[in-house]
Amino acid sequence: MSNPSDELNAPGQPGVSPVWDRPVRLLHWALVLCVAAAWWTGGRTDGWHENLGYAVAAIVALRLAWGFAGSRYARFAQFVRGPRATWAYAHGVWRGTAPRYIGHNPLGGWMVLALLACCATLCLSGWLYTTDWLWGYAWLYWTHFVAGWVLVGLVVLHVAGVAFTSWQHRENLVRAMVTGAKPAAGEADVR
Image (cartoon, rainbow, N blue to C red):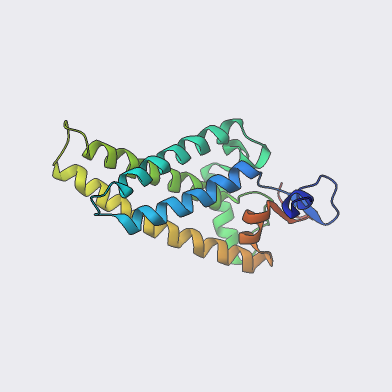
């Protein structure tokens, strides 16, 4: 029996563009689950929080590697735009004229980097705080604490951006991150 997402990702399927491959989707949802669980277990002393932090670190490392070696829409070079293009896109969003992107739009690309950087900061600061070398240092505790709240803010902005872009372009981006496919590109879409 075939997987529905395989059918949606089939090349040449009319009306559908394959976008995010299986590794991107699995890493995305694994990161969502592990970060949520790490947040929930923060402050516990039974090892769950630390183990979830190691899982997040592994996911971030894999996503970074896949950002250089993965498929077209997984690569950072495809969706991380320079300041001028990002600023122009932000103006288009403000005016209601932002183009539809098949992959991540410029603001979404920078959000990916911000989320990965924040998760990496949390993992590194959390791990360093457990070492004999840096155990008990207040600055490290506060780095981890503040990065946790910055991540919450970034997640809220990310979800708001996904909801707004889904509404603006009349497409379900959450479904696209589950299935890996989006409605086919039109002439005005940016590939």
